[in-house]
Length: 188
Image (cartoon, rainbow, N blue to C red; front, side):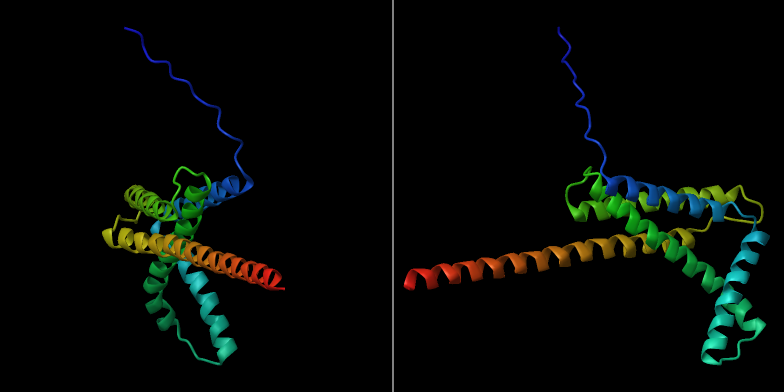
């Protein structure tokens, strides 16, 4: 019995967009894991410093008094928002990466692939935190992270639908103008 021949076609050279979105996705994952590798004390200090800078800016800009207790009270919310924001970026980058590498032809499938990828990153990130002193794995963080990825991937998908819709309208209006010109020329 003969074995079937398997031929591997050389892949096309990757486009600039493929390289850029792949690098942005990898960088985003690296930043996520870098922040997760911080022990609880360092992580809290980083959050506190950033939040203090933001509240000082808001306080000075809008002439609002903000106390230290208010900053401390807002720290947990700020940390959860930071989780959401970094995973929203991951969703945007990953969705574009999957769309550009053409592993997935449809934009909706690219968004789903980005969410699955984001879920895998979120779960592995939380598992990673088990081994970091003072940190723990939390299901709520995975849920927040996945919601962020969904928002990012959904944003890319919606923008794609809107751009495609605008392109169709533009094409159909140009077709209508062309048809109108042809009719006018025939009538003369």
